[in-house]
Structures are given as structure tokens and as C-alpha cells.
Image 1 (tube, rainbow, N blue to C red):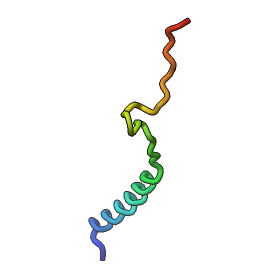
Image 2 (image 1 turned 90 degrees about the horizontal axis):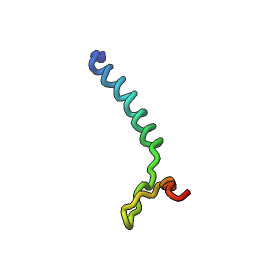
Image 3 (image 1 turned 180 degrees about the vertical axis):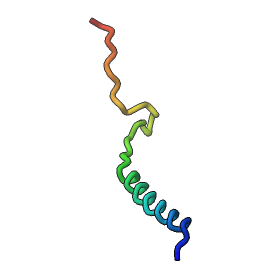
Image 4 (image 1 turned 60 degrees about the vertical axis):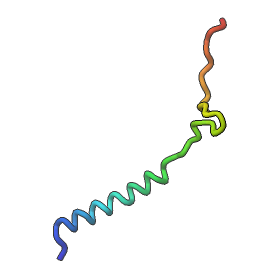
Length: 51
């Protein structure tokens, strides 16, 4: 017969492993930095100076 602590450990592992895997596959890696110069690859909004 399983002890209460073993049942809790199995329940935790049963919930954590699928949650971890779902989060791992849902994570989108974005290229945020230029590999050559290190600058941000996100488009910057235009600076409003000339009107």
C-alpha cells in the first residue's frame, strides 16, 4: 500500500512534468539581438523631431 507522501509525490510529478513540457514547447525564442553588432533587432518607433 502506498504511503500518503508517495501519493503526494506522484501527484506532484504527474502535474509538474506535463506543465513543464507544455511551457517548454509554448516558449517562442525570438532573436532580440543582432549576433554581429549586439544591437536590438526590434524596430524602434520614429523620433518626432522634424515637423
